[in-house]
Image 1 (cartoon, rainbow, N blue to C red):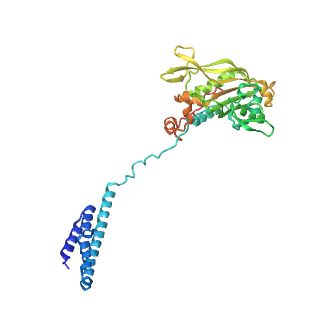
Image 2: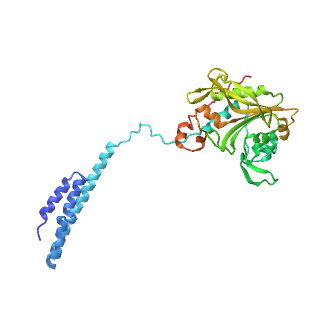
Image 3: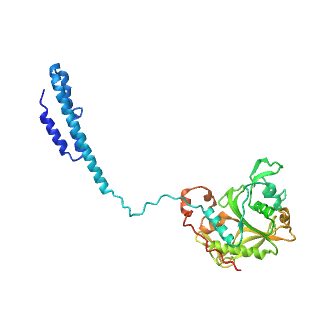
Length: 366
């Protein structure tokens, strides 16, 4: 058998001197690889006599084990040195602020609902809620809408196939006016409430969706007149749009649940591609825009709700929450409110902590 001691000593010296893992791997392949000199020596054992094999095999295996142990020891040393180097170059500066984690945002509709509640709370209004699945008595009949009214048609209203126990039709409410009826039946008069919430109508385009948000207001007391209605809406719009030059125009109209009824127009101007609320609609560069319906509560509605119309009278109004949100925050397509696109929400949404607030309140004369 050829003496392998010189090759072994050379390999051990090379292993000790190796300064990279790649260099160490090259030494391993040269000695212990399939064509390495140790592997080739082991293959010669089959050509030896039993006596020669008994003497040579332990010596070759001892060399193989010695080289393998030296390789493992040096590899551990090199890996430890590499880790120390990496740790030294990637130290964490604990004085730096932590990376900001992704956060959700408050939807503009939720933000505007909060603003509405805050403003009207300053004006003495309570927030009332009611079911979104209604019967046709609360949604239509109690609001003086007869059987032939177009809003009762199947193509305008989402009806359920089943009936209530009393035979009444069941539907998704088309406005939040039923909340006014339910509130008056429970609390009577005087009453001062707003009723924000989701409503449903069979309609869909850039300014209409099958589901949208509405806020309605109701004031019933003694001596209430249209002047109170106009002052309330004017005060609200000034606080909401944060402008003092809000001008309203009450235009005669018809709603079955109010008499007299008026459309509420507000002056606005076009600035670029955006409508900006403010100014007088008849001034140069300005125009009028309808924002909602309103009027004095019809005496038949008061009677249906259990309120004496000879003792009390009141006003009611309705506004589209999504629409006034679009006007205030410069949005141009109502459908985007309901697409759930995170890019839209990150642009128009509000932070949970730093969203705008109207906590300064509104000025109410004593």
